[in-house]
Image (cartoon, rainbow, N blue to C red; front, side, top):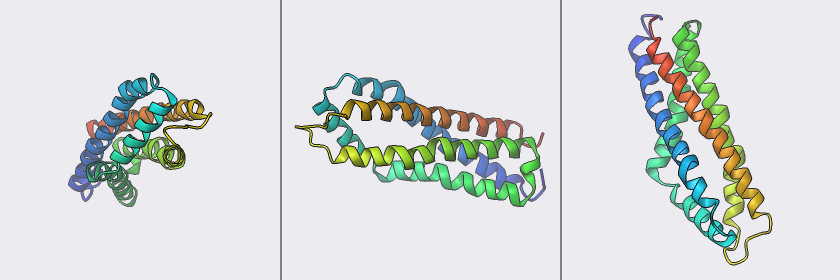
Length: 166
């Protein structure tokens, strides 16, 4: 680990782990509870609840954590690469965590969940489309993917911190 990268990199690793852990917890809680409850709802109830959830999740606190869990690790990854710390175990673990998060969580959200949420927003709760159950199943499946990616990423961040300076 280079002398210049010590404190700033540790700070970025820790903040990345905190933000990544919050997102992993958010996605896990959703997968372990909300998704299960959504499976018990009728098409009309599902539409109403999903529209409400998708509206309420767009708030400042969630936005700061969601985007912070992308921006801070990217900043850390840039520092790791620029300072040559990508050759260390902690640097490699951290970069792996960033890649897993970006692909498995952020990209899945941007390319799969947001378009599905936008589609669900157009549904009428009194007359949901016939394919609602297919959308629900696809949404649930991809939520489990991003949950897994967020947990793996968080674990990699923790391993990077634990191996820092090794």
